[in-house]
Image 1 (cartoon, one colour):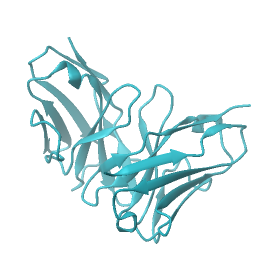
Image 2: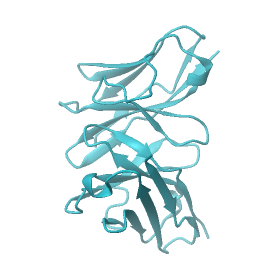
Image 3: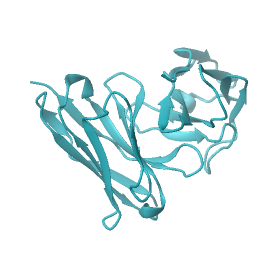
Image 4: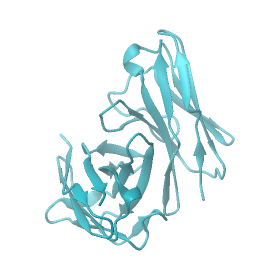
Length: 118
Length: 106
């Protein structure tokens, strides 16, 4: 069965960096685009970034452009999110999700909490 | 920017039909999908490509789209359907979620 397991969250001071990982299993990781989606406490879902199956194309939400970098290692079936210059408004649960290849995100991880606070 | 607008809340009695709208300010030919999220859980895809149900999603969930509005319909709503629902669309290089609708079954 498909599993997506995020790790790397925690508490970090404003201006610092953090890297999230998402270990994938149960499907051919290198065949699918992958996303990061976040949800601030008590708020709705916000799409953050996506990477193509081979890593050739990446897109970002305006709110993280220039600060966050998505990457993947298809040999390790792992997705990453490098988050730099973190701000308090980046505080959220971060989910990795698998693109269905047709429409929508058909599998999601359990999420990892990132708290940006001094 | 591209925005999807949903009503903040919808209330429905058990066994009745709940309808959730999603209005896009710049609809093109984008497909819409819908997610269900229960408290403390990750989102679950319930509708994709405007009208299709993933395997394992009950038939009472259906989707439609007309003009600039997509609609998620839950027929014969059950108490287990109480959750937040989000629409989502995809354009070139941009994925957008709606503001979310809390469905209360009472």
